[in-house]
Length: 135
Image (cartoon, rainbow, N blue to C red; front, side, top):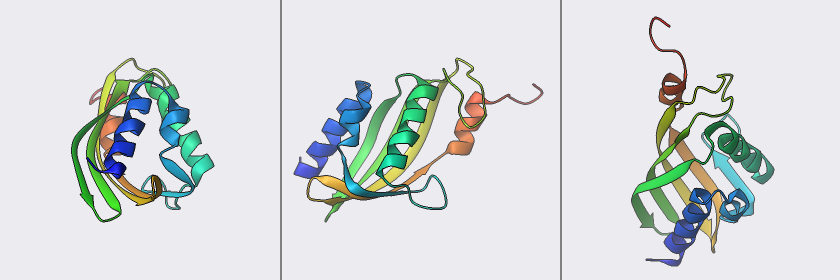
């Protein structure tokens, strides 16, 4: 296991323990996170985004299926699971369990991530928490 994948494993442990502040140490102060809105998010926006995730999905858990490293980048295929306990994207809490698959590429500078590109199935997530056909 490389130093980068060790750092990433510790960050996942912190996330799964509900320690958002510990998880956020993965990101450098200059982080740019792409994929969740047209403009990249900076660190304070990343923190607010993940606070919203924790508020909406209780104690979300990250499962890593594949972790691939090349140069200064680490790519992860993951699933985030949780229970919809708070409003998310205008949908009031339903109590439904969710599974959000995604792929992310993290570019490291030293032991912190300076850029991250993510692709998740947010439409599929809305289908899991939103009303189904005929409802």
